[in-house]
Length: 275
Picture 1 (tube, helix red, strand yellow):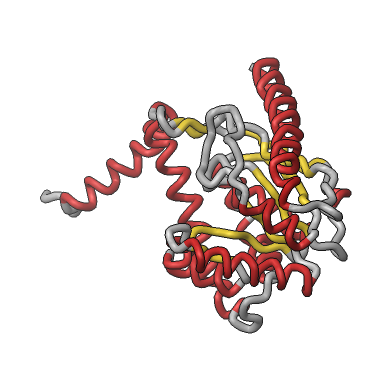
Picture 2: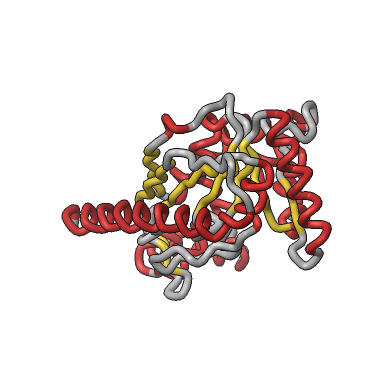
């Protein structure tokens, strides 16, 4: 009797049966699969939520709504988040939030924080605005997209964003390292965020993500892991001038480095004990 299955069907069945083996044995397969699932889930959620955020265009509280659904991507990829210092957030105050930047996974940690931060938006690179439903949804949620190659326009957008922050008691989240860096340290800071904080006399709110010890882009490793996100007490800029910029930047970075090293060290020790 001739087989009732076609070659494509047999190939698909064989591929499906090999998935558990590939996931268990191949770091590279697991790495790309987890990022695929992460991006796919967030994109699907953003598409579903577009009609909701369209009701309140450019409203930063749309991010609170989105986070309640998108945060479940952390369970899919196996990341646990621990929040520390959330008592420092005052929803009646505006801040320039300064955070280290290690991976696109940072957004998952922010999804965990948004219900507590309430009114907080983010400065992002302009190309992200053109990533389909995600980019459109982010724009509708009040993200500030800047083109770093157009310096004058970027400065104008940042100035306008800071004015809205003060008027609406919002938080503006900035990654001052400029690029993602997951090598066990915090890179030197660019000065734009500190200019804004001093010129507008808005406090700096440092936020530190512990090292992503479970993620290695070079070896394509992406294991389950835990991240501690620590919010430090706000740093006042009252009375500061641009002459204080270097001192403010260095002081903020040094505080963050100390917390980064301590929280990362503790997680690595816990992992060693567990195994």
